[in-house]
Length: 227
Ligand SMILES: *Cc1c(COP(=O)(O)O)cnc(C)c1O
Image (cartoon, rainbow, N blue to C red; front, top):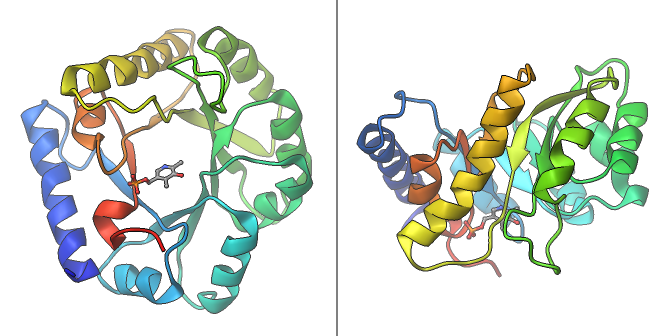
């Protein structure tokens, strides 16, 4: 098994190479380490190698990691499904939530965000492939939810997130990400100051970077298989 520090260096090198290949500004794509089902030791190893942003998907699991790692200045992102009975803790412990998909949830996150913390950064999760089983709002619901977010002072809408259907062909991967990019550009034309496109995982991050991703969320290619 390769060391996490080696994987991290290789990943960052690939990201920089894809930025160049697709005419993106150097450093415009950030790496979020998707650390669900990975150990505290693995997170520490990645942190020691220079990784500072980590994404967790399950609140219960994340809570254990926070207490084990509270002495490290990690920026925590929530990337899993948000249940309404978990919003208070999510609003207290995370800097970002990538997976907002309803007015009800975003209102709760706003109301429960502690006053001493800066506004919670959020992305609207979009079901770009229209799969019935997937979370995320449908494409035609994005504008309504984005407008709603503008009236919530304790949250800050940063952009959009998607987990498209799995495709093995590169051009098909790109097509899915292109839909999210188009929506993102549409929001910007409508004067939303969004700056984040959270898209791309271990198996499709090249296609995501080609279509304008600004945050790739990568687990397996950094930590190895989840246990
Ligand atoms: C697990 C997960 C990832 C990372 O997936 P890999 O294929 O392991 O890179 C990215 N985003 C979300 C929302 C996830 O749950």
